[in-house]
Amino acid sequence: MRLKTTATLLGLILSLTATASAAKTPLREVAAIDNQMFAVAMAIEISDNCNDIRPRTVKGLAFLWDLAGQAKSMGYTEAEIDAYRKSDAEKARMRARGEAYMRDKGLDPKKKEDLCKLGRMEMAASSQIGSFLK
Image (cartoon, rainbow, N blue to C red; front, side, top):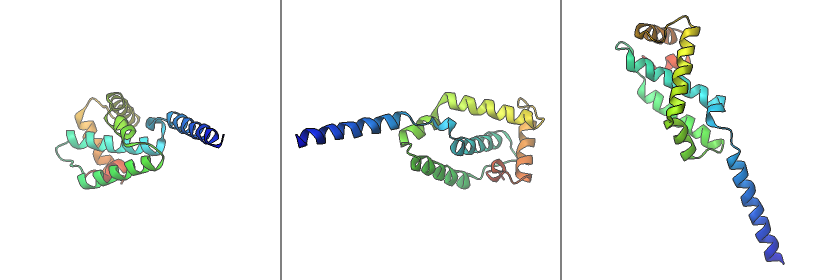
């Protein structure tokens, strides 16, 4: 009887763990992670397209490692983090978010010179995006 009760409890614990894992909020909806990823994505886009603006690569990589650590401490697995980071849908969403961000600043996301202007504005403002650029 005791073995049956233990097996039942173990089964219940495993099913609750699986349910809790399945019920995790998608990383895209975790502002503490997603907003930080947006800043990195914008900095990469700017540095990739503006010859006079370079990335602070070491700072960016260290930041991303820390961000992954934060996600892990929230219970996300390496596979979940990688799926979010590598997702084409997430990349497209970040691009759309970046375009909206530029329009909100009165800039045209289709103009490379406006992207570079944004980079200089972000650096001058010492913003999170600007902190990844030099």
